[in-house]
Length: 148
Image 1 (spheres, rainbow, N blue to C red):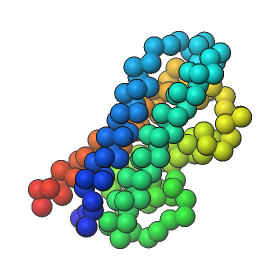
Image 2: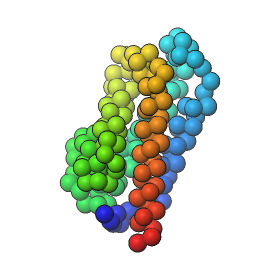
Image 3: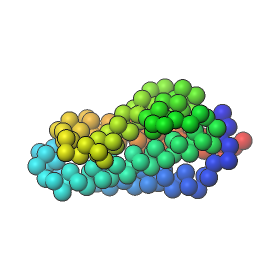
């Protein structure tokens, strides 16, 4: 698999953006009950997660375009395509597709967010872990490309 004509600097900036937003979320000190009751905490987490997911979408689209993969209309399908083409690991495409769905909820259905479900316990950790793993996989791709 060869990543052709990719703007590595832009891609790395997007990866840094994801990591930066996730670090900001992880540094926030609050318990689950505070998430449910404090709209300021909700807003901060939502915005940071939205930015991280949007940067991940940008990375996925850049990779697919650089590899001259078929264009997809939906961001979730770009992640699924990258998985199908073995660019990202098995299962990662669907995890990131779900993240894309969550981003859509954050942007378009913000009135209906179930904060207990969205950020309670494992779910918050899973979203962050999935984004971190996606970043690590992309860094691995770039490192392989740098050796070729």
